[in-house]
Length: 218
Length: 218
Image (cartoon, rainbow over all chains, first blue to last red; front, top):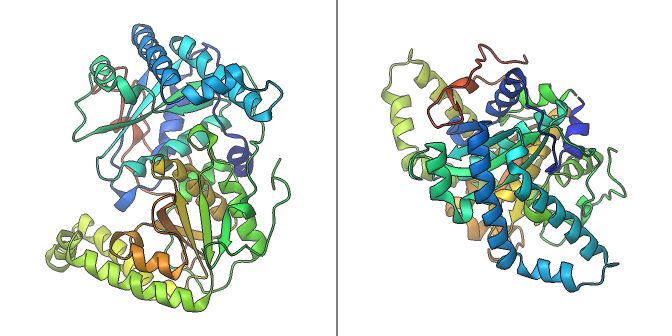
């Protein structure tokens, strides 16, 4: 796949089929991931692939609890908007769409064939993100949809780590979970605020001498 | 460029020529960056491109100071290894190579044609890393070398923000600087610990049923 196609179309693909992902494809994705740079080239990362059905069922229960908790707290304003907002408002339409996709994942996490967990080091946590984003881009090229979530590491960290037989956060800190599966939907170019509106030249607030009227790849 | 080539060869390319990067190429890189996902699709990012010669000279002075500070503190063990270690030890050889490249950048930052600064939001800082990594991958496809550094935001944050006319950290938090220029060296596949050594199956410590003997793209 062309780099541009991967960069422009890789986005959260939560709804996937239960079809398993072959080991040679998972090996390919992890091999792409570890080519990414890391601070001081420390390569301080560990990954765990979960396909065991019983573990996925247990993780789904925790994830479902986690989203229900968030909907009642952090996401309450969005939930109220969905319930009481003008159904023709583009913001309400988008919120409904995102929420439906998140709800699908919470109800069906056990049907996602592979869940990848990633750990990093306490001081350099963001260093794992290039590797994870490389893995997600490589997945797109294999026709595999992914979504990254940190939800399980909000209120359920202890339970998740126990379930995975993983050490207490200390030497290794759990960073994220990525869902992987063959998507039911299609890839499209994401709508974004154009880059000239979020980029300055030489001084904060000074506009750049260029504009991007529409995505440069589509 | 093929996605795999970009994923396998994009690495810190600090030594670059002073040749300027055309605006239409910078627009292309920023357009690729903003296609990346961000937590809740908030797109909470701001970028600042610095090509102004006076600003680059001032930034070089601060960067030089910053690296000298780090060499005497955080990197002291590595500096001692370079000075006193066995010159035939692969670890010493690698440390010397990385140090020489870092020193080149500290002495020549003002010759790097474009410096990109990136800001994110306080609670969701890592959300900017997919965008920055997308930008670095897109740069590779344009023949542009990049390196990401947070060094200027260790001891010189106030001075750098003043120089750039940027707000105090608060609403916007400076995350990283990326250097961009046409490289003097060549791209190669990075050596890494193989993925099966850092990936587990279903339970922490349990090996995966696959191995990757050599990089799957080269």
